[in-house]
Image (cartoon, rainbow, N blue to C red; front, top):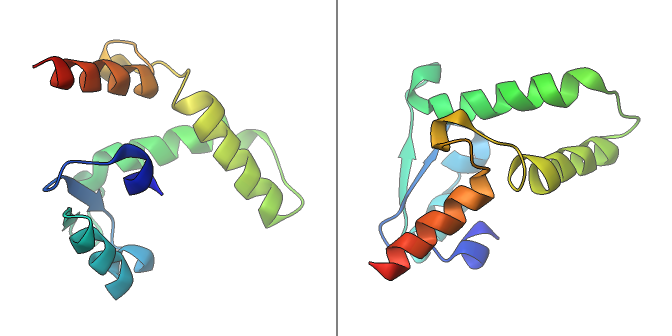
Length: 115
């Protein structure tokens, strides 16, 4: 879905941890089909994937530690809503000039198109 929505340039690096979904043959095949390059951190090394470690820590603190859910479906829906309705479009990040990720991506994409 992300490839379809964002249409990344061939050669874009997709970094992941060593979760089973990322080490599967089908994931690697889909990366290659899209012209993307897979990258994985070392086993048991959170330093290799610091950005995602930070993301999960933020989600834990701002969402997961504050509520409980009756079903996995409710939890999945809450996580999706937190990411798509708050984290990406509205949550400001000091590392990108206090812009939201969506705003930063929009400006970055516009700058590339203008170049």
